Image 1 (cartoon, rainbow, N blue to C red):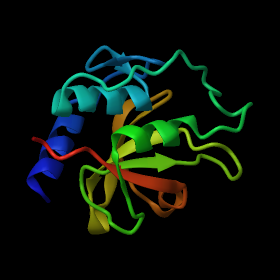
Image 2: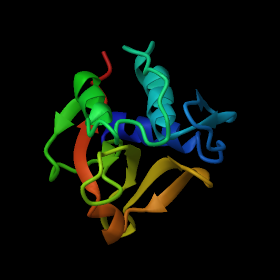
Image 3: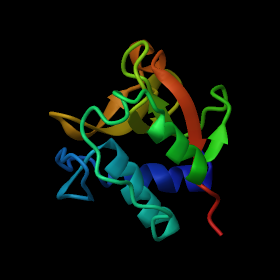
Amino acid sequence: MSGQGARIVATARGWIGTPYRHQAACRGAGCDCLGLVRGLWCEMCGAEPERPPAYSMDWSEPARQEVLWQAAARHLLVKDLTEEAAGDVILFRMREGAVAKHLGVVAELGARASFIHAYSGHGVVETALSAPWRRRIVARFAFPEEG
């Protein structure tokens, strides 16, 4: 695991147990999946490059816009789906034909592959990156290299 990847994973694991709170981004107090990535950005990179507008649980679905994907591509480094590394931000499409709107951070690779994410009803957890989850990955990103 690269030095930056290890730092991202360690930082993300520090968020485990944070309750799920829609639109929040505060370690220990509450966050959603975007809030987890926003919080990691602040801890790893500094001030957020852009604040997301208020969004509903079905955000961007009625308009069929890939808002989250576009925002991730503006601020994170776009990676090939096959270039898997610990610390990657992964974007999921939760059901066929829906917009991609769930984020996680790769924690472990190989036989014990896992990712960290904020999941409604569960809070921030580390989950096995099983075949059903892998099938939903539509994009992979990396945090910018630390300067």
